Image (cartoon, rainbow, N blue to C red):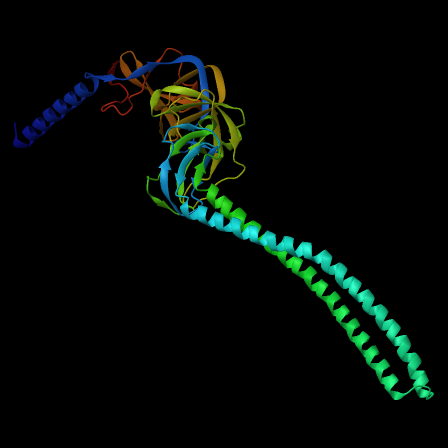
Length: 408
């Protein structure tokens, strides 16, 4: 045998051995796979939010300090149930009490001034009115006498001395009339002083109310009934106006807030049922109902457009707290008696949807047509029949058509 023919002979032997080994590995080795049998049943179609939901509430209050003072007593503790009006803590009231006392004194003084002015005014009015009437009468009488004597003097019937005396009396009554009129104008001034005193009383009353409110704010009370969720202050701490000193929440008003993609908006409706799970008890589902769909769509750059929804938990668990995460599935439809398989058993390749089944102990490839689906399962319209065994572990190494397989 020539050298060239020997080389070809050995090459053929290697190829034969390699092919035999590959065939043996592929078709004689049995792969253990995970699989399920196809069956008919009800398939619940759901909408799932784009991200984990959050427990929230609208019945919460952040209580903030209204005055600058030091905390002298903390009456409650976190987690305690309180009623509206219950005392939460007390602040040092020394300074605000002093300001209140000063405002009370200022108010009393202003009221006293007003009362005195009001009492004196009627008597002053009567006195000035009587004085004016008397002055007017005297002036009229003096003027009449003066005019008569003036005519007599011009007729040379009286002496100049008598005329001068009449003129002096007339001037005196005229001066007295001017004084009476001036006194009447002074009454108008006093009436204006009453208005000023009334304004002063109103101002002092407002300042007294401010002092009274500040004194009331030294005792911090619960604005609503609920659970004390937070007390971010310590005994002896100096708080400033606007600083939160407590947070109270009505736990009976808790709901779950989540975001859904705008493409699912047409499938949602008020009153739809939902199932919610919490990390605290991940194996238990809690029934809920959709009660609000936001009228607007959030628009954020580089993000999908989402709609905010709110769901009420029908039987809230005792551990529920604001801020907890919640996984939500909203039930939009239930398909009755349909063939369905786990969604993970379906793969897409070249625009075809493919599954692997166990047929006579080997893996067989099937092209299927799918219908609607939820998070876990997908409806099969064509390509599979009932009670076929579908492989779900598609990431199994070595899985391909013709390979011997067995269900784990």
